[in-house]
Length: 389
Image (cartoon, rainbow, N blue to C red; front, side):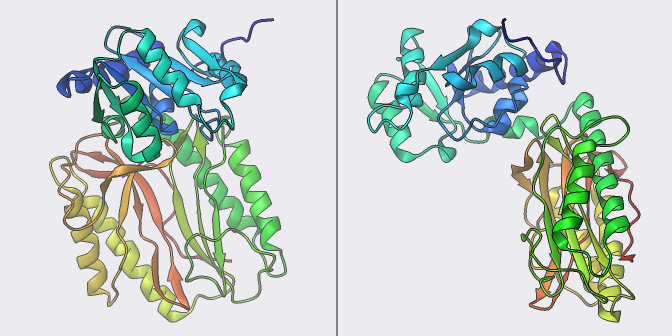
């Protein structure tokens, strides 16, 4: 029986709209074919979310074709047929002989396709920053007559401006994030193992919210006393104790889209210094959202936050956030002083206000928002509280 098509996360017209934007950028860069290899960009242009990026694969966008062509390991072909909006004839599986082969790999299959299509002497775009140097050299040697152009983040910058349909998807992910944080508040108690709390929260992130299940698991961080100065630790074999502080960061996922959320919880009354830090961070968060207006800059948001936090007697060393969407971070615009990226409606950011001040002081709060003409509109609806359990 043939692999059936999955119901698509977005209508065909949405994917074609995205491809039109990419092709306009290709024309501007004078390239005829773009080899998209980063998983998030492949998701954006096709709907594919299967975890096959551990081996060479590429979505080939050609100015001559309405739909792209996907070249992947043969065993991953059925997943592409199932998930991608493109016609099944445009999914090409390369043979297992190219796996763990010291001489040829899946990129050779991509180059073979380009040569067979007559593109070997045309402009070819690569996401070069995310490819091994030997792979780039392989393209230059085997397609010696082609003009190889570095198109790193070309698609990612296009992704930065979300459609209304994408905003709906991120709101769904945010509702799941909220549900996960409420579950954390419900289950965390003295004597409970961190692992058991994580299991309950993750189960909620999978079950979803408002009838919309989570479709994947994103990064999950649980940094509790005495590890509150850490930022990227998962659960440990420890248990929660009276007086424990717990810093949480995770996100619901809907068809690749995330809306990250961070909150700090305290078993018992929070220490006075933690309460003061929380008050300053919340004030800074609100100032940052007020500055997230169309026509402003990423720097404006960071300046508003930092100036407000400074009035409360604290400093934040790390940036205030980053562009967010598929697979969490978009490596483009950054909420830091000096980033002059101009804000446009429906740009989306994780306003990440985690603050790790010393080895025994750390605190987190964050919200995912979209830029509007009147300021940042948060997707998550959870109260901006220092939760006392």
